[in-house]
Amino acid sequence: MTVYRDSDIEWLSGVLDMLKDGATWICPVSTSVFTFDKVNKLYELDGDRSHPTNDITICILEDQLGYKDKNAVAYDSVDDTMAHIDKVRANISQVVDELNRRAVIHDNSKLRPAEKSVFDEVTPALAFLTYGSDEYNEQLAKMKPALDHHYEYNRHHPEHFENGLEGMTLVDLVEMFCDWCAATERHRDGDIHRSIGINSDRFEFEEPLRSIMHNTAKYYEMGKEGAADE
Image (cartoon, rainbow, N blue to C red; front, side, top):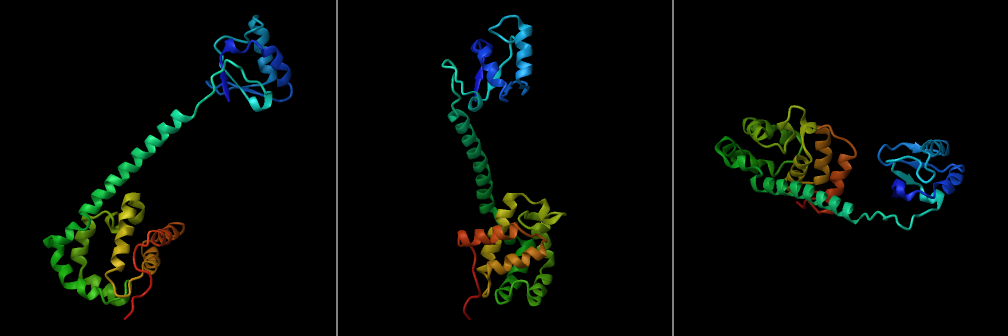
C-alpha cells in the first residue's frame, strides 16, 4: 500500500471513475475511509481541480485501482523487521540471563542449617520410594519444617505463592520443570511423564500446559522415562 501526498494525486479525476466500482481510499493518519461520494465532495469543495483538499494524506488500495505513482517511494520492511528482531533478541536475553542466574543459585537453601540436616536424614529413603505414593508422602510430612523454609525462599515451587501456580512467571515454571526432570533421576523408578500427571493433579493444571511439559521432556530428552530396572 503506497502513501500519496496531496501533490501526488493530480490524476484524481481519472481515479474517481474507478472509485465508482467500490474501491476506497484510506487516510493513514485518521484511518478515515474515503468512498467515491466523499472524495468527490472534497474534490468539488476545494476549487483546485488538481488537489481534493490540503494536508490530506491518502492511501489507495492498489490491488483494486491498479495505479502506482512512478514518484512514490515503496515501503521497505527491512528496517522495521530488524528493529523487531532486535527487540525479540533483547527479550530473550533478559529471560536467558534470569534463567542462568537461577541455575547458579538453585536450591542453595538446602545447603544451609535450616534445611540441610532434614534432607540429610530423609533424602536417602526417598530414593527407594515411588514419587506420589503414600510412603513417599509420609516421608515428606517428616520434612515439613525444612520444606516450609525451602518453599518460602524458592519461587520455583508453587507453594511459594498464595495462589500457587497462578502466581508464577514463565521463568519460575521453566525452573520448576527442570527441577522435576532432575528429581526423576534421584528415584529408582522415576518417570517424568508420571510425575507430570501426578503434579497436574497436585497443582491443579490441565491442558495445554500438561502436553507442553510432556513435549518438552521428549524433545530435549529431559528426565527419566519409565521405571528403571530392578
